[in-house]
Length: 440
Image 1 (cartoon, rainbow, N blue to C red):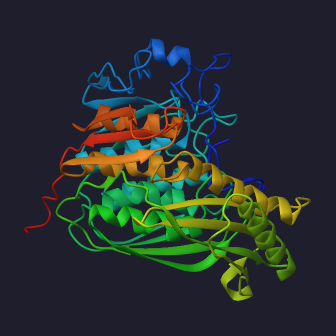
Image 2: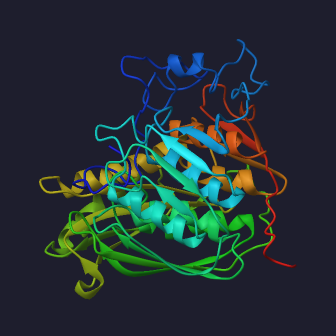
């Protein structure tokens, strides 16, 4: 399943990335990485030259991300995108259509979500495509639920009000991911009305977007406002978020290579609808107990919250915990409740996710890692980010960013850390996208 679809809430959001590689393929090892898992590329993909993660024994100086860089395949004037490779899900569609819109590249995407149990467009993906089409007066063919191929011809990006409604519990945060890079290069301010699920399985929760994504992404030298009008949960959806932002001339590069020390741990455990506040208190208490085994000298403030009935649709529960460091880094762990799932387990899952993200020594967590790639590619100058093991979503975002832009990425093992740590530096020479719509 693709992340952010309307599925019964189960487990964490943000959550570990799922594999989209060919069936039957085992995964190669990155030096110092965990055992083969869904987060690494398959040998079949390596043989196609899409990405190679290798380093000679005892040497971590050379890039672990060595690409046989080539021009994208073309079908006449259209760039050809294979939507079934690597991550094999909706992320390929989001990255490629956003860059198509920004760069004026006509696009054909084949085998859409071929790596998923239900291939083709789902309501969330179609809503995102239609919003991108409308915000640049583009042309979209194949835009139907279940479609496995689309063609997209972009026009000029315009500001103003744009609406996307999944009519399901599909993630509003993933709609934001595809639209935000585009409207940054519009001619005038934009207002995005995004409707669907605010706390969806297999996607960042809206709380993560506000508490972690927003302050970090604004380091690229832009700001935006995110107003949660109404929360929506599985299965109804019905949530609404309004995002307001002004265009920029260009994006500044970022340097996130110094973790610092953890100075604060805070968060919120929420319930909505028919669920009692006691569940939120139980999630919070269980998370604190779990964190205390590793972190004993900091005050941990996880507030139990009941969402107001007039600001939430349906019944839902979950938790997000954020660790803030002395250098301004933000790393998180989160989880969603579901029927029959013990509240303590929800809290413990979020705490364990946070501890795992802290353990690898990076400046960003697993969920933010891939969301930074398109902004690094568009920025003017060199961006550097220290992270844990490179997820398959991140590898996929890098591949398509390099294919469609002039950005160049390298991934190297961090030499500052213990050799046993899975810590890497993602470096990007950005393409320096200029907003020609702005005079100054």
